[in-house]
Length: 250
Length: 243
Image (cartoon, rainbow over all chains, first blue to last red; front, side, top):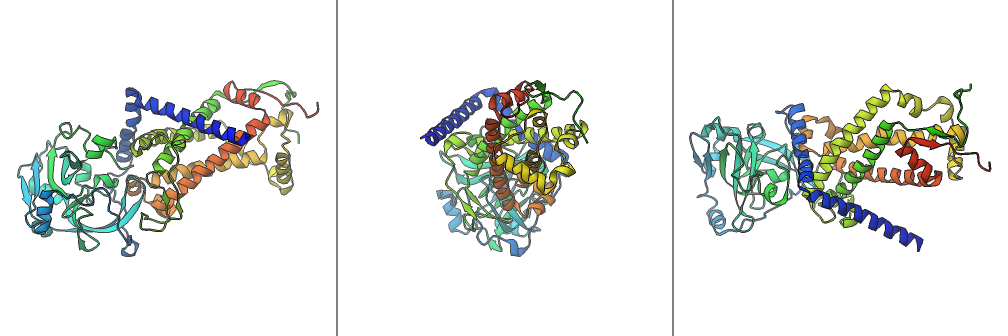
């Protein structure tokens, strides 16, 4: 009886305290303070460590037996299905926005550019990790081909998967990550063409950040000066709709 | 050798025990660790499986698989990975830099060598066994002896300060992909990101055990006097038993 009462008191006490925290988190200025931790972590990581530091690359025998696919497993829109049926022959990666030479690159064109291959660990924000071997074109190569303007500060990635209500997935990175040597547009995973579940025909790899930054089903890369006009302004689908951090290095 | 001060306080006297810095640090830790633990369980709920090594996802072998922790234990009370992360990542640097400041401060004011370092005389098997027996019989030191940490107290405080808390902070950093690139030795130290996540989880529960024992000791040693000493700094020296 006494044990029961103590347990009840503990549950009620914890529940009440935590509910109080929830109320606190709905206060606008407290929320801002809480969310500003992202800026501290970005500042600490970018400011106190080497901005060019490479993510670890693993040996082939360290690759996960099965690379878990997450998020959208298949965009399944009529437009995507039409592209998929023809083996993405009609698919083009558009490079637009603040560039001197807008591009529309086909899959064979991308495959003919110099490649990078890297065995890296993919870390989901949920906590799991999977190691896979990626092959793709350094984003830097494509940006140099498009002649990125000096006014560009961010790259926005537009995707084919509809997240509901005609809202396609989007993500963004800044130029530190865009020009990082391991940031590639990957078309192959573990020596196979990218599967639909893993983002066919092309996905972003931005190795020093969490999984939701690695946009799948790429359709367009847009160079912009600010993220203000993109979605609700926080720079990505989950950032805008679920309060995820834009800086996902932590 | 008699190392008692000349004005040896008498049992029953109200004496100054904890400095303001100690008290502030104690209560900010209580608040931050509560936040970190409950938001940490919220984050764990996003993928309640633990692995050893560099990778681990649903198709890999987990050494621990749990149901989600209930809402009365998690921050926020209803599942939100984003909000749990905001709480956790806001509290973590405050806690880590607080610990760092405490350590620098305690070295500078000689709190570590004076109060926490083991004396040669107290780590011999005889005195340690005596201290264990006294604890088991709930015979706590009285008079001025109550002002000094006994050997079991020192062992647990040192274990928490210099092992558990640094391991929690470092394994936390090891889970960050940005930190992995910046400080690759972290991944090597813990044998992979998933191992670090497992150790982080185990150490967090280790800390819960410490807190529970700590609270139990406060209750047994006289909660009013103990809590007062951590709020006002003043502590009444326990009288001899039977006196």
